[in-house]
Length: 317
Image (cartoon, rainbow, N blue to C red; front, side, top):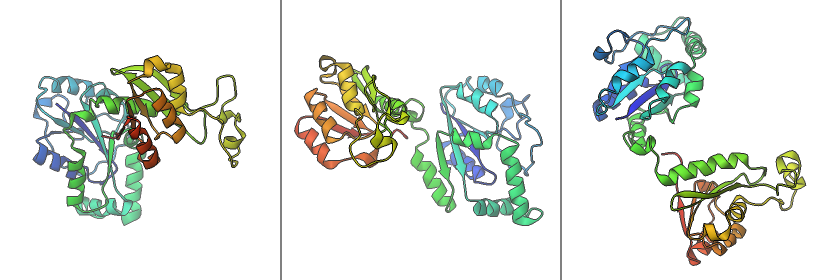
């Protein structure tokens, strides 16, 4: 079972997504704008004229709705439009929930609006006023930012459908990521702690899918970090080598050679030649990285010749 939330800007194409998912993937639609909370069993998709919201009225008791949906885990549901943070918080409590966002250029959205509702008063300026109301009288901007995936509707209807199909919305990895994506995302999070301004990397070493060691780029604990002015090269963007220890090397040292032998290393950035030497020396079996732009073919060949396997994984399913 998948519970798909759909959020988007005014006239960005939410109805098209709903129609495609219903017809192609047999999703059962629930329109929060037209739902009667007392009659959940009769929920169905209906197009309705635009009605601006003057105050944050919640059209449905989301938790009660979720409880009802859980009675049949064999059915895939899509709930739309998600407009309020309280709605999203309630839906996020369900492990099968996935939020899909959609946006489109203003001119495209204006054309969609006119096609569906006719020209608003004062035409484009009138539409922009309605768009502002729909954004700032709800939490749509925050919700879009929180989406698991965002679709940009910038082309034809067929191109929009292709984008939806490419996401492979029924792929369970969206909800329960593979072990590689799980640790790769964790390494991405660890990189946020990096003290280096030039090489913001995070690293995790696992053995038999258990974390052995973690680390991130930075200066030794006894010194001030780059971000605080500890490295003149980084802090003032000067030519020369940064004095930071790279995440890979620090993680190997923390994990000790005996523990990391034969293990898997997860990093955000592809290792440099010096870290590759440490990886080989520590007898790490596999390196998994997630930033494709940092890839270095020469370093890859260097590690593979020494028996270290290399794998790229996207942290976006």
